[in-house]
Structures are given as C-alpha cells and as structure tokens.
Image (cartoon, rainbow, N blue to C red; front, side):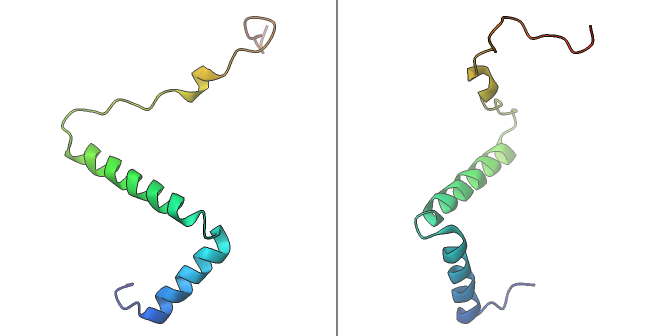
Length: 73
C-alpha cells in the first residue's frame, strides 16, 4: 500500500509534521512512540501479565468536606 514512497512524498510528510507539531515537539513524539512499541513488544513476549500502570487518580486529594456525597439519597 505505502511501499512506493519516494523522496518527495517523504519530504512533504515531514514538512507537514513540522508545520503541524513544531520542530521541538517531534523528538518527544518519536520517543513516545518508540517507548510504546517497546512496551507492546515486551508485553507480547512476556508469559506473565504485566503490572498495570500506577493509578494517577490516587494522587488527587479528596474534595473538601470529607466523604463524597451520594447522588441518589
């Protein structure tokens, strides 16, 4: 499908990426994609299930006033 990309097509795609994301953001995006691929491959190779990522909601302090209120009282 995309096997016949020439230099011109690749250059146009890179130009669009630079215009859309900015030159400073592209290395961050590339490293994020690389880390995601590594984690995916590691998960495929592993026989044991991986630990889930840490719950980020736990770091949010509870609302003032103590316990949360029930909606249907």
